[in-house]
Amino acid sequence: MQASILAAYGIVADECTIQPFGSGLINTTWKVIHGDKSYILQRINHQVFKQPEVIANNIRYIGQYLQQHSPEYFFVQPVNTLDDEGLVITENGEYFRLQPFVPDSRSYDVVDDEQLAWEAAKQFGRFTRLLSDIDTNKIGYSLPDFHNLTLRYQQFEDALKKGNKARIAESEEMIFRIRQYAYLTDTFEAIKQNPAFKIRVMHHDTKINNVLFDNSGNGICVIDLDTVMPGYFISDFGDMMRTYLSPANEEEKDFSKVAARPAFFKAIVSGYLSELKDELSPDEIHHLVYAGQFMVYMQAIRFLADYLNNDIYYGARYEKHNYVRAGNQLALLDRISEQEGIFLSAITTPDRVV
Image (cartoon, rainbow, N blue to C red; front, side, top):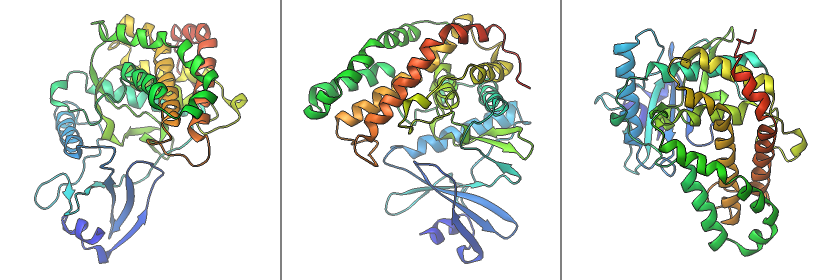
């Protein structure tokens, strides 16, 4: 399989060293070493991304735009095939792409210091700023309704009607807690009606491992652009809050370890606004804390809905896995909400972390 894929790029597999690479959960990734050149080969998960061509077109258009308007920005452009195509489509309907491997770069899976959070936030902010004038009508939706909180809440309510009755009964307390935060959905609906919230090209998956760093810890660029599509800033800023604030990730079963660290919030704000302070409207800046509540709440809803639906989307590595994940996210939502005043005060003084 890999031999025929690489042949489409004019690369002989027998001349390569091919090894699994990275920690991504969606696509399958290999590092390909061919002489003095290295590449990243990916099989796109067609079960998640129903239209891989949309992804390829988005990345091509964004790459062309950046080359024209911001040629100094380091953008990882996929390699075209010998037939000048951005994807290889096999007879079995699988989709593959090849990208250059960035030498002297590294990524992180854990945000363990404030400077790292600041640098990552700056990189995502820069990516958005450089694309602020792009025609969003030419960017397709690789995952339609991905961050549509109203739809996710409706899917949760549907799970309560049609899901596993035993699981619904044992989740009564968590269901009550989710409904207590339903006002966050109302705020999202208000945002969609507010012209002060601009539709921009957003990354939509701002985990720390989607930023490349050099060996000195400076950001190089953002990567993994499959989820890049039009949306609101709350998606990117909120996902940074969701994944950077707590020293414990969403898999932690001991919820006492879940925290929302104010210093890390300040670092995210500072890094993000260092690029976007003149781009975001006052209304948008006023919703920086809401962004985190929005993303954490949506993830809690999705985990619990999946649990009630017998784990048909995320799957489960152990009994009650998604129930635990939902509880973890609700604990983080509580921590953020309890410290909302502290976080709001940090927005007024977003000094750089040193």
